[in-house]
Image (cartoon, rainbow over all chains, first blue to last red; front, side):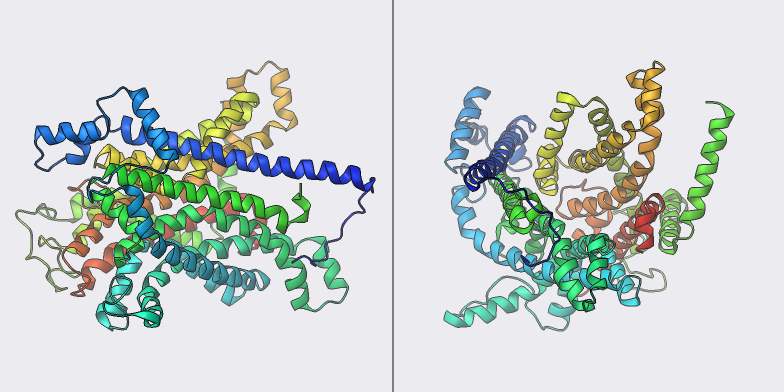
Length: 344
Length: 294
């Protein structure tokens, strides 16, 4: 990507030491600003979640115990546990210090600290979401490049149509249909879970992979379309540029023009969007994990919603938001590395 | 408004329509939408009185497709076709209202932020960024869970979490419009803030808002079905998402009752796709550069 042969204007040469120092300062300032922005966003999320879970419901205990037999004493006990007998300011302080220590209280449903539950369930989700992002990005980018390069052709129109249709498909429904056809119908794949019981050692890897095929297919199907459309339109934008005409005029082969000149430039906005869209993938994971009983955070979130188990949902809400903020930060820090034009 | 202005607007609409018509996918989407809206409006006329009754259902529970019930029956013995017809009402209602909230807020904030600039604009845009960075669907689910189960909750949750995208688009367009000389002329002739915003900025922003609205309704319907599937909807209304959830609850997946799962999902896909196609067609008319590409 570095040798993308962009025509660059000659940079006026200052004395090296002066240029260096101001460059370092500028770079530090850029990274500092991005880091500070992320911290502010994180703080905003923590603030929002306090209001969301303590203030909007009015009485959180009544919301949680809604429709189940709970004695007055139990309710009082819960109120004391959540610190609802204290003033709002005191509640906020204990909530804030707790959040900073990664202590989100105890799950109402499992009677265990939320942090423990999360650390138990985080790796299956990372595996599923990570793999699906890699596959859908690769698939979406590849099809997007092909589509833009031959735009208007039959394969381009078919690909765009399929992508738009899949984008309109509710992921939970697609998951159910896949189960009906490939799991309970043809019996090729297991209907749910992540592992079979009694499988040990190295055998676990193919077993987990076998369980992961259908959830992965569902997640990829609803996510890759976005990457395809973004890559396609951004490459189409680049294809009208002068430097492409120059490259062609030099007599470069079509494939070289595409690989060396057009695609690297078109990749930049797409890469950013892959990171930014992570929130969407996380939500897709909630649904897909629920459908396939994948033992991850999404399934935990769903089980917390149906009670509703407010401490658990709150902890996961903050975690999901933090993940998206972190990924946005990574995109911001990666962007200057990929694109010399915005290098601070 | 004088007659001249109206004649000009009529001509614009006519030109818009003649360009829209050339996009086959867009016209297909429009036809599908018309059919669904018609179905939703005529639901009480084309279904029997006891179509949604759980106590006096027209058939027996979980029947396969037959002459009486071409798509079988659900767990209470109601015809699946009737469920789809009534479901279109719920989906379209939620889609339109959520979009209305989202577009109204988004347009208002976008125009205000673009017109006034300075620190109010900065504050508004910071709030927008704040919403953009949070995973909006997760936020929506949490809102719906915390506020209690009803259609209104879902509408508010979708509306409140989806306006920032519109606000950004509208702000950018407002800034572009305000840079034009005729705005300066209007100000020089004594036009106040309200006059500039409502008579000059608004008409120029409306086309973008229209495209955004169409795309948003599709998204809102998709999100509604998801929320209903997660059990956050009103338990008494038979939306398409809720029907799929009911199918999953009675084990339609393992016993392969395709007629219970397939139709509501296809209905969702058709409506969402139709809105998307129409939205893209409108975008294409507004931005000829996009049109060449399709």
